[in-house]
Image (cartoon, rainbow, N blue to C red; front, side):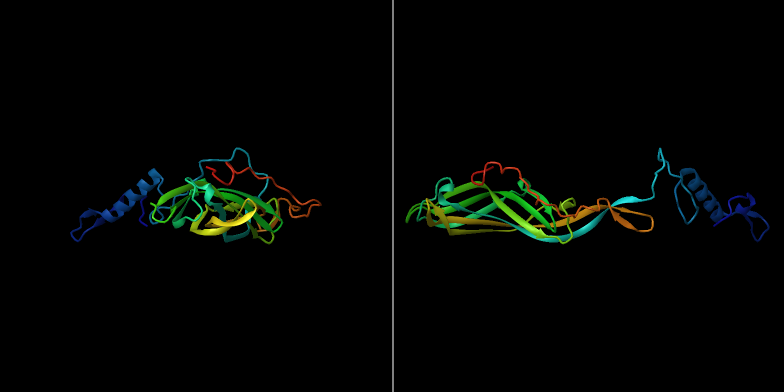
Length: 253
């Protein structure tokens, strides 16, 4: 690093005995002066020590911090499915019709899922809004018709999470559709009788579940739980009542 404190350090004597300006050192001085004036931290030229602008209005009374400890994290699948009778579609698919195609279009933006924690398990109940489109021939020689049904496909899953407690926090990534499935001719009970005029619709979803809990960590890395009794068993098992599915299962928006 050049010395910027002396005026004559910026000049050198050439072979003829005349003084010439040392541009290299001059540039270093100019750079350092610029650094000091603008506050830019360039370690190759100058060593600027900045002081924090923001200061705490009152000092902290503890050198411990509150952090989230990860109890577990895993990728899981959820399956939403339901078997619909021909009569649920508009227009109604007549018995004996020939099914040409079934298209299932899930609405991922409208997925609703309710998550609850019990000891060592994550319980998830929800539904996937979907539109089912069926192309069929009502009779031999007749023109093909298209029937549709906008509905909610329910799902419920429980995932084992050893060590998880009811007061922990559950975080799920947005559900991603891995595949859609349909099967015409599935058995369904109509008026107390088993009929094959049903269409099974299934949507396979994927998400990553992460369970965390708040803990206190001291400067030496020691950790203690915020609630050291969070996992104690209760005399009565917990019960949950989840929100009602809008519009029911059939024909819901």
